[in-house]
Amino acid sequence: MSTVENQTAHEAGELEAIMLVGGQGTRLRPLTIGVPKPLLPTAGVPFLAHQLARAAQAGVTRIIMATAYRAEMFAEVFGDGTGFGLEIVYVHETEPLGTGGGIRNAAASLRSGPDEPVVVLNGDILSGHDLSAQLDLHRKTDAAVTLHLVEVPDPARFGCVPTDFDGRVTAFLEKTPNPVTNQINAGCYVFTRRYIDAMPAGQVLSVERNTFPDLIAAGETIMGFVESAYWLDVGTPEAYVRGSCDLVLGELSSPAVPGATGSSLLLPGASADPSATLCGGTVLGSGSSVGAGAMVDGSVIFDGVRIGAGAQVTASVIGSGAKVGDGAILDGVVIGTGADIAGGNELRHGLRVWPGVTLPGTAVRFSTDA
Ligand code: GTP
Image 1 (cartoon, rainbow, N blue to C red):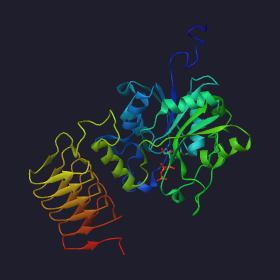
Image 2 (cartoon, rainbow, N blue to C red):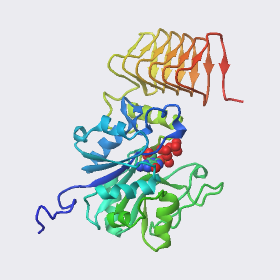
Image 3 (cartoon, helix red, strand yellow):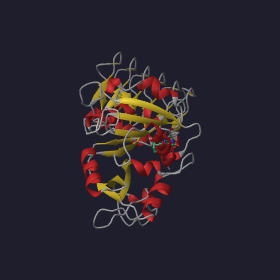
């Protein structure tokens, strides 16, 4: 039996994970201009809080947070992880190293032994999949890496990941109009530690374009763990809003949601006129208010927002301190921090209003619709 000093992480009851949070989140601009995607308020707490709480529930004990963009903000929010029953350590890339490079860069902080499993999580995924079952498959097959794969109805939008009859991944295929499978990479990997150490250090690497194809070419086993529980990549505004609403509605359970699940969540200090309707999993941030007869459906309203009487807000994100005038109609839009949308405006699908912008009070109809 090993001495305490010689114990590997697993003998000591540890399960380590690397959390990739270094991306710039360009698809979520302007929301991510000042705040990294994993810290955006989601069902009342920073997005990553849901992942951390679920990881802890699944037995992860120690997280290496692989940061690059706005690195310092993560430690300010999550500290040493005690609040989640986790130990969190932070590593920083001075230049973003990509997903593969970020994993390799975090290796120096791991305590797991060379043959022990290390979980890697993309920091922008909401997933209800069974991580313990993924770990079991990894151990049973002695794979180099075991990937969570999900089946999607529209695989042409993604790169796809075919597997053989034994569940081994055979290739990583770029986006194509005629994908050979509807399985895609779901952004949660179990690596056997030594395969992380074997990756080239100090260079930009993508797991999908470099690491995984190289392992397959070298004859190593990459297993696919196909599971169809709740899964969402919150990389776009539509998906981010959907994810927040699903958490509020209880479509995916998360111990980090600060309140009971239901049709809406009002954070402390938020208020809505009794004649207003809040539904569809809407979150109303601290100090925000909704006026008489207004309707806010399936939206994320940050802190200190004022929504005027009779306004209609659907499937939208409204940044902190923004104002939405009486009777304005917002559908599927992103309103940046402190923007001021006067009453009478009608903003529709895909529109993004930059922080601080004022849209004047004359009735204007903006839309990206044809
Ligand atoms: P977009 O710019 O909108 O594509 O978002 P993104 O920058 O987050 O990229 P993507 O969605 O492809 O990233 C997947 C995950 O990897 C996210 O959790 C990112 O935070 C993370 N990530 C992406 N690039 C890096 C990097 O260079 N270093 C680290 N440590 N993490 C990264």
